[in-house]
Length: 406
Image: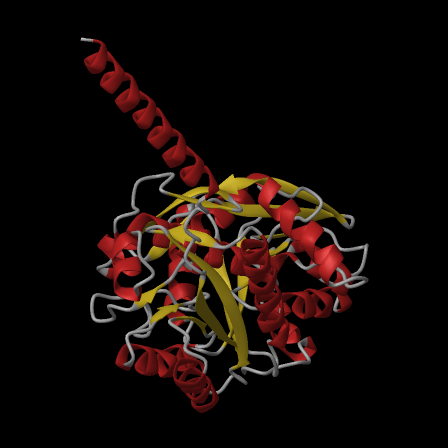
């Protein structure tokens, strides 16, 4: 009996020693290292030279700030793998040939799998041909003419537009014009001569539904710098108000109209920020509203970009158009997280499903993808659109609205 007890005691003691050894070894063992972060190359092809180079510069800076923030936070985790971003910008030069060459360089030399391009329709189309051949996802920064053959469609499986349709602003802008200036009966339209005829007709319809008449539509040549001759013609129609249709040159047009003595209300549906118009025209600017932001009343996300801009571009004034690029980068990452993949085809498939209000977050507020009824695919962004009113040089956000093509 005693021998059995002794054997049991020895076995128990051995077991305790074994447990202790396992515990010590486990405590000393180093955890397996996390897999190294992989790099996603995101490229942009935007006009960094030419008449709308300011737009390209602003978008480039918006992307720089956004991807810098993401990398500082350690990147993103998709399916247990960490990813950081390498951002490379190229100049489209406003040329389809230059844009296509830049796309080939980004894809074949730099390894880009996501490209934001371009601004002008011929450049968008030229880049898409290269992207589709190489299964690269192209994000359109915007398209001047929504529904244009180069815009999103079922025939373009690797094209998405994480931005609004510019003509969505027509109803909200004319509603606001009627509310803020009830005496306006006639409106003249100023537009670049690049195929805006359909949008002009839409504005005529929208205006008529609100008791107004479009009495003139002056089309000016792309690349125009001196707008005084253009506005001499426009003012000959004696309009009560003037609309500047989708152009980054609205500040120069404003200045020309005011120099010629027009003191009625003017408005523009370009997303160019209100502060840019004040900077060009001066503190005397009044009776003007636009669909651009007011950096003096930023949303929290806009404030984050403003603060980062102040550190990164010391001494250079912040220009709010850059928030649009920040949003495109953010929307892309949200789609990656939804897809749990960085494969371009899976990412765009995930975006196609993000159609419920609030499916996406943007600097402007909750948003979602839409457009199936109009474009055949849910690849156009639907988000709140600002109206910022300027009176005597003072900017004030009138509100954020969901626009409609009708």
